[in-house]
Image (cartoon, rainbow, N blue to C red; front, side):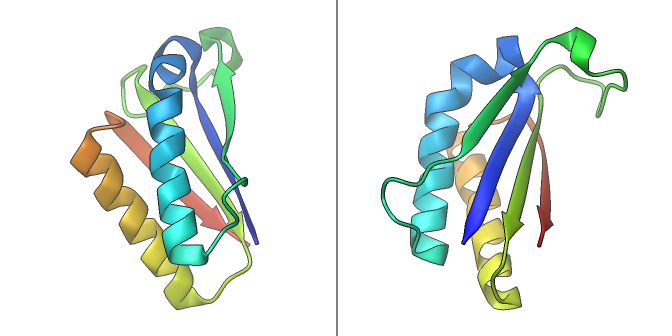
Length: 100
């Protein structure tokens, strides 16, 4: 199984939350055969919560993936996620962190 957490500034994350949730869900169900009811967790933050600005923009979003899966499954999922996010222009700036 895996868990997906998505962090970003509240004013930027809330407006894209539903679209981003749909994109992430499509990717995990396709690449990892997740159950339909399993969705990403969102963590909207206020600017005071983050001391170091990343990538020089407030539209920066971090997707954290904790998963136990084979290397090929991880690669497939991350590639699919990047491609779908770019296709739908769901996020302006993104960082994906994948761990076990």
